[in-house]
Length: 314
Image 1 (tube, rainbow, N blue to C red):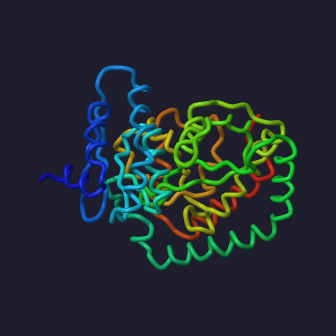
Image 2 (cartoon, rainbow, N blue to C red; image 1 turned 180 degrees about the horizontal axis):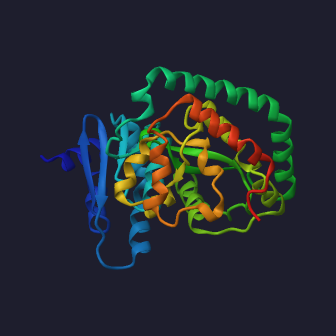
């Protein structure tokens, strides 16, 4: 029995995945209690219909199988479509299994080059996040109240982003757009998946209060909770969403191993200086690691403080 068949048997979804092969043909492997989704090939036909015909029918069954299985984590090929990555991320979250992108290692990661300084950085991040949340709590509560009064819907927006070593997590921001329309009458993974799919593929307009929050960068203040949880740092490369993966060349995938930051040098670059391609855009993030130092982080942080009081969008 090959690795793929073993994974199907262990997960208890052999029939479902075999049926799915006629539509998506995922490569599935079982390695050291890790479920590895290695990619997919799609036959000719209606792409959306074929993808969702399997998703709608089997995702709840996959969730139950993941809950019962001995899988410790899920590894996903980064070249999967954003909607498929979201599906597996949601399944992993519901099943309490961490989900990672399968990335090649990145040489000279800061935590390897300067482990003691990196530990100090992590402690400073959490301490600063606690202090800032305490200081900014009146403003955060006011912003949340204004959002709730201005438009019906959720106060916060949660979107899947790529964290340290490719781990997927939900980045928290204030909701600045019209809330997503009701996604049918389904519950659980189904409705959440459709709602998040809407967040990626639909370009909803900004609300008046949302435009003001974005203009001054206040919409990103809830990310201090992500810092407190250790999912991002105060200073680091820009956190990339799953939708960004389609625009990232494979040779830049390793840079996604680096812990992203709530702010950094990328927040002070003027629009006219922004690179036009990922070949250039990946360079600043890679340069963050060579050489990295606490003093450099402090310098980047000091540069971004004035930006907090300037308009971010015209």
